[in-house]
Length: 419
Image 1 (cartoon, one colour):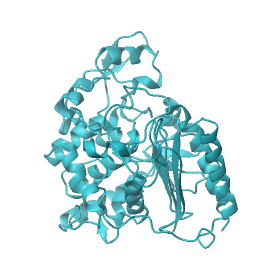
Image 2: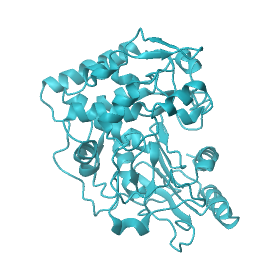
Image 3: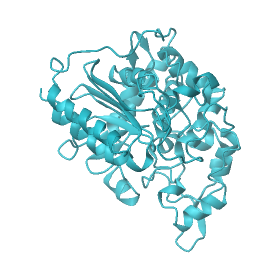
């Protein structure tokens, strides 16, 4: 693992904090009624307003051309918001322009939130990222690895909790390469079921073959869904309760959850083209609370989470994680070998930590070194760039345009950042 010595020192610091009895869960909560959007002057924050207007005009044009129904972009620096604007409408047949209170299906932006929940348990000594997953889920003791001829052989390496958090577990998402034989085997084995709870789903996944030995290759996967079951076992409560008690509740994220009350249905953004299995009704409590992609949220809520991360684990006096814990999450768990061995789509100059992608080389990426981020399959994304003191949240519901807007957002933001 990259940075082994540094990681070991951080682990020691975490152990010392636990031994000292330092609380990991916030004892108070941020005022949910006080907006997280603290507006600042764009020029004073180092942005060229004329260049930020390039983003505005481009998104307006995409709405006018019918390319998208609507979108929302927020750009900030040094804790203040330099730009925030909604474009178009929340969805087909609607008249409301998206704003900070619009609810979006954030899909894989769920992963960083659940990863933070996991690390609060680490701080309490209830979870060990270096422990085998089988310590919490016994069925992960005897895993099998897929072979080219369609057979499988016993794994020779244990799957560790940090492998789940960094997508080096050997698990997969079948949709990444749907025609691959292993993906078809996973589909036949029930990968896409959502009629079972988190613990039952983890058992189902344990029976499926790994694509690679744990720790040897990066492949985006169901790892965080399995982590959800680990978190439930370690935390002794259902995932939604743990998320609410440890992250969303203390941060005042009242519009973030695995389901929303029916009274909030009119606030949901909808895609230009309906995909029922993807954009299903989030006002009905799901059987499976997907730790990998089940949350919906607002830009105002997610900004609270992003500002907590940019504040080294603290937001408005409420501490969710210790600084050293967040530093541990931002240590790269990948190597050139593990990235080459899998399908590492974060791209050149990137790595992956415990729940976030990481910028390792800003000569190859626009955000500064140390930037941590992730995105959702419908096109939502966020990043926190400590080097440049910037943060960005972008919301859309258009799977086919997700990566296009990721590229555009980085161009718009860093072209506009002039000092």
